[in-house]
Length: 466
Image (cartoon, rainbow, N blue to C red; front, top):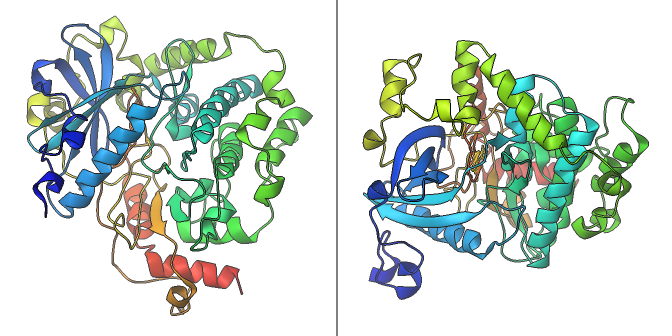
């Protein structure tokens, strides 16, 4: 392996210029974990000089498939460095220490997924419209650059203190359009991604589909087919009629917006730019809709019981009272140890989160957490949808999937771990924290879904195409 491509090597000038040379432990203080996953962990932190609060995603490139992990880190840094838009997470820099990359981003309070988890109820239509407006502006910007996000969902949509919407977690993003890889989180995945052939067959409209599913998620707290395992969901998405809103209480404008996003045929689906002129987006609404939502969310977090408070306290970390100590007196000894930044410089990729990338090609090792973002999903982090997995897999040829003869695959092979792009408050994002911990049942669902290997996925396609 050439020296310049060895994981952690900075001999190649093009790679060296991606990283700041300072020791990050001498720049950032008060590190507290706010999310974690297969990629590593996301931390709340403060710049010692500027006093800015930031989110840091630590990604280790040691262990199995370290070369692929290193390439994922480089890809994510390069992608984030290119983004300059109010509705995409802001990149602050990247550092190396002890075989771990420290990816620094702006801090956000939490993801849309965090908010519905705190309130235990759907969002109001005005709030959903405001979120969709920000998401569409971010997507239109990405699509104008020929980029595709490929993992739009509530866990990867972050909100700042001032109510700005930020797209986060670009671990599944594609820098080419059209694309042909099987990438995304199953429940939000567009039909054409599931059925993509070897030649590039989908474009930025897959993000529009995912936004439509996200609207249903925000309106009903879960996406369609969420009671199914990932494999069954993929089959139904490709084979069944378009999902619809369950309640008739929504306005005609909102129903039309969701229906437009979820047109089964991509040719009938509007672009992100065209949707910016949709009535749902352009109609008057309170400019403080999201600021008020954030205010109410922070108040609700303070009223949570101890267990749920520990899961969501990241939303309050930027407040003065929450930043004075890195140890919560209610934490167990293990949790307190996890809050000690000196003990967590290197995070292995043994933790798995909701989103996972999986494939048989060079990127087949990927696993990714949704919050799943910051939520630096920023992805991104533990998220309330513990069964969400993101898959990243080059579509197999017809000769490959013709060899598959069963719908359910009992093979215990698992996708290897990899770096996730997601930073979320909750996990994903630029800044915020990750979702709460997963119970035994959630971990078991994740284990089963990791068994969805390329052969299983190929079988789905074969059955759909019969």
